[in-house]
Length: 291
Image (cartoon, rainbow, N blue to C red; front, side, top):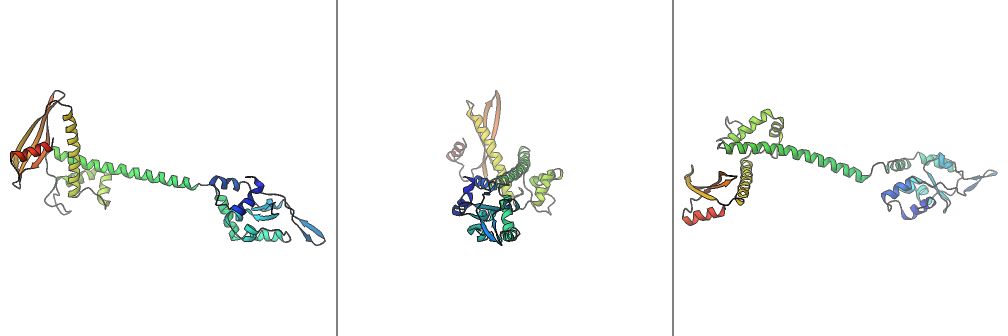
């Protein structure tokens, strides 16, 4: 866009229709044409002075309309005399210009014009998203460390064949169960875990449901590893034994036995309730479902 056509374009098409780059380009190209504006001043003729553009940095002109305007008001909107109609009389031009220069509307528009191009909104949004992602990733890292501690406790209790829960697990109990007691023991030496247990209101990892979920997750990972091993061996023997739990329900334990790297390994798969059907067919169905 040619510099001398900028004001005419803005008056007809508007500033908001432009792209961000075009707006910045126009901001840096204030038209300052020589205008043929005259008026009778006493016995002489007063003419438009081009040095007025230097005296009023916001002043601009349109040679096609032969009028002067406020550049920032044309861009952002303002008094019609300066933003739409323009001034064609210079009889009291200096007085009007000085008054306009200190008006609240013009000062606001000058500030907008000054800030235009300093910070792009997409950059602000992008930076905001980056900071949000950084904060999110930091929280994810903290959550992973906390979950890792809980998984270590689950694995330890499983390896040592220890019960998870106590008879009473409230704050007044002297023995809340192995899981909670170990969690609090680790919290004494690890500030992150201690702060989590004291401040977290959504997820603490101490409830019975969370304990069961962690056990199921660890079991799933171990079973996946076992089944991957089985896929690579030639022979597998299955051992099934019946036992009775503390509630007098019949359970069947299943163990897989096979060779890995010339070593015989035994993998315990789990206990399965067979109290409702202890027939050969019922037991076989459970064994086949786990293979």
